[in-house]
Length: 115
Length: 143
Image 1 (cartoon, each protein chain N blue to C red):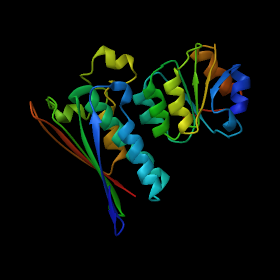
Image 2 (image 1 turned 180 degrees about the vertical axis):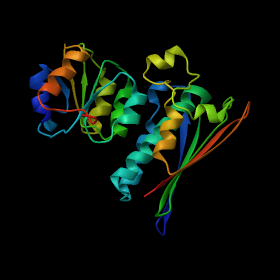
Image 3 (image 1 turned 180 degrees about the horizontal axis):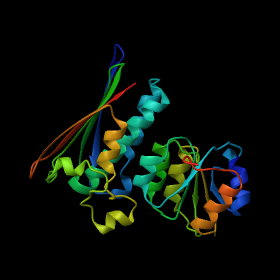
């Protein structure tokens, strides 16, 4: 699945990284707990979260993630977007809630690492 | 930074005043390791170790210092702070044990995963902590 596909499935708005929409991603995780993301994510993937602070960007950077999707319409500030953009990440937000957003991606073929 | 004969050493100051800035040392380390051609998987493990350590230093110890070296075989991360120390280091290494405040938990950390994550992603971890004086952690990641 490409990041562009994810945008379509989630009806998401792209906040930065528009040039990287055709990258292929193999898995995703949904979490508001960055410690869990650091503990359980193993491959380059997509992070869905409702948490909004710069450590979301840092966590994604440490894990070599390609894309962050903020659920429930959450919107990061300019400094956070600059940080993500400097690492080539795509950042989007969707009005969907976490459960629905994860469900749509899973049904669309993007599995979790434990699936 | 010192560099020569395949060895490299870099020191970082971790500012304890600003949680939002935490991670900048880890980010700089990652960039450095990438620039000298360390394989991505080893970089990722080192980044997790360093980042969890950095977050811990900001949350619990008002910052500290980190020294990262690479000798061609191991990445060594040496973290030192002058914080309150860890009362029970063995308990702190267990998943789920945390003394973090609710404020830190709301920021996505403090679930008692930091030290276990550091242990899981390093090949060796040594920790010394003295109450009232501070904590030193040395992690080695085999490349």
